[in-house]
Image (cartoon, rainbow, N blue to C red; front, side, top):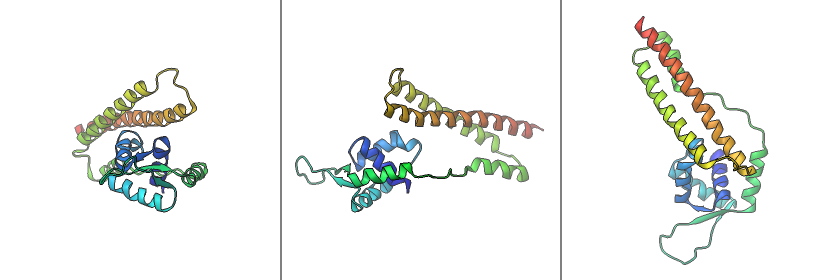
Length: 180
């Protein structure tokens, strides 16, 4: 049920077209909540049918023009309700952890290289998050909205920091096992 809420959040931040939303998902919300273009367009139709959003009137009628959407009061209320509701944390499901567990019974062949590949991917993501932090959250940018957005970014930074440390340790350990 979270994709509709991610879309409502994005539209409250800035009314957009479906294409605009997909681009913004690719650059911001998509870092922690991914969705395909088809999923976004499908959810826009559902949100509109539920009375949570509406298409903004076109400035001038044109065939094939992008539809821009805004959130209606019912959509804001739904997002506020969802934000305030208690939710349990989701259990961690990561295939790399499962693969390491399986390696304990079938061996580690090929695993060190993939651990190092994952490490490089997480290092690149961490660098991207740190660049965003430097660009978008300079000292003095301290509105309540900025502070909450920065908290989300810092969660990403902390998670990527964890994964880079853990993957480096895991690759080193698997490498030692392979050499014995």
